[in-house]
Image (cartoon, rainbow, N blue to C red):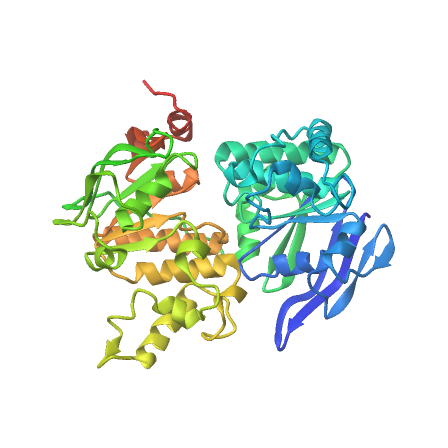
Length: 498
């Protein structure tokens, strides 16, 4: 056995994040770890990578007991980790990011040509193509993912930990990553894959370990299980089938008319966008990241101003209004990036839940703290948000638990129109079931919902109509009953359907 973690326990005060976990990894295999948010997956891997110290338990590598006091120790023992949120310098070139920490040249002069040569060699050796001279921050998420993997390979990693590696990738980029993992295992590398996406796990993993509440509920070979069994092991119950009632649209709650944003190089970022959302329907927007979806949402919510065109909420022209005014006219917004747009890392769970509700939850200029605590406590219970207390800083929540808090906050705004951008990004299958059910409940109650998601299965499951964006334009529209992954994929790539 290449790696063995025995009886790993990690306590934070009275709370046990890991409880006596046994985990092993064979040479040349992909061993996936799945479980709900807060099940202890990332904590276990942070221990393996030297970022945390176990309260008790041991780690053996090639049969020899080892301890890692830092990530540098883990790297020296051939263990690398690619984190859920990329840890790259956006202003550096790809080559500079890959060789950082072990740069070619002397202490006085960095040899850029040699760095490019090294990266070209890595690309050839591992079949992962990148442009070493490109600026990292201008590269697509799929390329940045490759950069992270090439970086740990350059550091000499034989064991590579991937923490939610496909969360920001397009379907095409996901397939490229899974193929790269398969190729690397054939070359002798071993992978530990943390993921919520069971279809991807079942595609690439050899073995799967399921965690629940910090303990192992089972380890199974891929050929001996399926998504239903794994789901039950993760959540401890059978998941309910999502029920979608027939759509009965009402009046328009959003109208976007001829909206254009001119790009810096002459090419429009948004080019004459026209769309509408009616009360009681879900309109999905599919598209590869970078085709104008983010800018469209920012224009609708007042974070950007259009160069031309009009945004109407209900019967009110809100073009040019502030974000606060637009929200007051009936908009709630689950943002696509929970950290950039959805929360302040230093704010408490209570304060984060309060955002956007504070003006109605006050009396005589004072916040009604009792009502606020009751409201946020209800969300924590309903959405199974794992937190020590309402005073816990959101920086200590897992990404999925923070996502659930933001979703609950925006759903409870009670507005006639809701933007739901990547609403289930980074959440587990149980939370996904809850969020999808709540979105359809709001839709049945008459809320108009604009859904933007990189997950085509989510678009197809929830939408009544699907629009596809390509290069800043609406490339096509399909009713739900006619939309398929194949048709949407063609439109997303700039093709057409007959």
